[in-house]
Image (cartoon, rainbow, N blue to C red; front, top):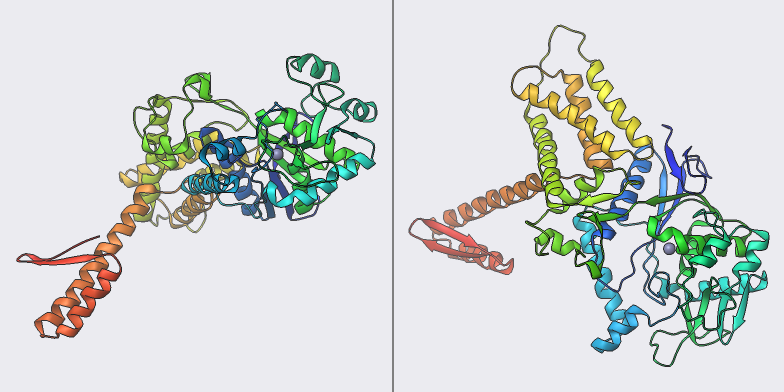
Length: 494
Ligand code: ZN
């Protein structure tokens, strides 16, 4: 198996990836909070970890990819107080909280499908793992790293920090955390401002609530990922991924919970993708630049000068390294659209370009093609360096274009190697598909099939076989296709 290097947030170094169990990779990625539409911020982790999974599988690993759905007790990012978003929307709209969560889960799935992000192996919902979360709170209490206060349970950060290091992942020490905690936050029943909730007693207005040994309430946000990763990947697993915005406090708290309950952090490699900015600014509702993926695909957000296809968005994201910030602008997206078109055109041309059989040692891949393919693999295995991999794929595109123009030829062996590069890497690992090609192909096939069906009907009619001709018309109608006989022939429409 090829060596794969990934940057581990824990060591802040690029490390050789060595799985815990040979040939098997356990991967956990923090999934969406389903209280709003999937937006650009979801596209980046979705695509980054999709490429990681595709690459690992291509290299021969079996991967168990767990990506959760946060559908309960999530209190907006660093706030530990306040009404749950799902509950609030549900109260306003007079619907069941699960109805809201379901609606947004389906929309998220649809956006990911359009972006060609393969579904995870397991997609656990926080609401389906309340028992496991309660058990985890008990373990942390038994270990002495939590305390009960007025029906809620809090993680005792100071106590934990005496034995372990709180802040090891994000590189903070407790003093930084103390000074960084906003004093204005209502401290409630916590001993220290930096303590975080493992279980919260529900206020009377709170809709989503479950019974527990401490109160009727709901789990703290950080708890679900510790409980569900432990359940599906074990006490220790290979890779935990997520956006950089989740590193603190979410992942820091997760790591502390794991250590407090299992005796170890539980994760060998922590990976974090960087954030997306829009025209140089952070994306956010208050900045007026919050773009949902649907708006992106339709081009309906005022910032956008046009619609961008899901593959353009995917290509655009892959043009930057996942650890760099990525700035969205119309100009950059239009450039990405052009780049993607060039690659897809080359993929089509390659299929149609014939091979030559010159006198040279055929049957052997040329040094040039071998070099390109080697560099593509090297880049991908070097901490998922997709921009460099794409740059080398463009070298292959130039080679194909030159053959298409008749300037050079492609040997049979090179043709086969390049075809594999497009199938295995461009489509397989990078997940870039030909949007025009596939839509065009399906439409072409349908049109051909309809010609065939209508021809059979004409034969039946000419033979005065009314039973058959009516049957064809009725069967088409059942499929939603209506046909109309005109002087020029038969027309059909949906
Ligand atoms: Zn998480």
